[in-house]
Image 1 (cartoon, one colour):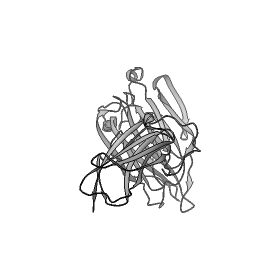
Image 2 (image 1 turned 30 degrees about the vertical axis):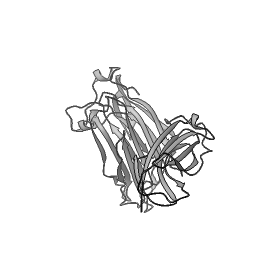
Image 3 (image 1 turned 60 degrees about the horizontal axis):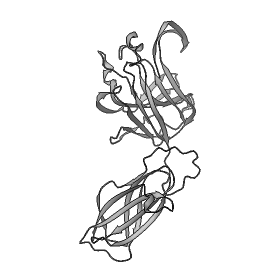
Image 4 (image 1 turned 135 degrees about the vertical axis):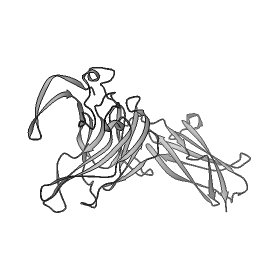
Length: 331
């Protein structure tokens, strides 16, 4: 999305008045609204003070809890600019900045911007230096979580003094490059707006995910994209499990199609003592699988478990990825 300096001032009638513009921005708005789910984008900001954003908002006001009031919603997964400067909003040029607005009009017609506490991720690099991944999980009507590159998530509780469950309406996705109010952030210069190496925001992709039970098939999902480098993995190379006839195996997998995961358990001499396999339904899943053993295993030695992911009804030659886990059994 490329911004530019307009050749001449342009008057636009908006917000009940005529406004003069001399900078042109860009926007993409989804045709359909959505509610709940995980959304992320990979984007490289323009090296200007134009915004780079990934957010959602409602297009209409909804009736409030008092019938005479109304409200609208805005969920900002990320907002930033691409360069620093001598202005108070210079910090917006790095990291990730997330907000949630409950736009409330009370019964007297007074408008309020009730915000949840802002979520921020600090970074030493400018957002225009490279691509970054910004993600938001709209978990329910009351909470959201935010994700920046590969960092641990941060969480947010929506403002709920007017409604117990405020974010209860669907919203439209928006990618917008626009100016911010001066002097908080300065207006971009004609020089940077006319420089092709600085004036463009690059969105590599935008993705939306929904949370489903990993034990249920997703055969109704058509035209799947090859989003994942398919694999099976463990959070830790070593775990401790209570001695039992059923051993719980926590694992993670990524699969573009329905796959098969085979688990094999070996003793310290390399002899196989148990095995199992199950269908790994297409998606990115965290789950616990069970492997049953016929005899009581020793607590004196570690056991090795291998996990292989492959096409359904495939063999070892068609293995796509393999991981190893060591298990210490305890009484």
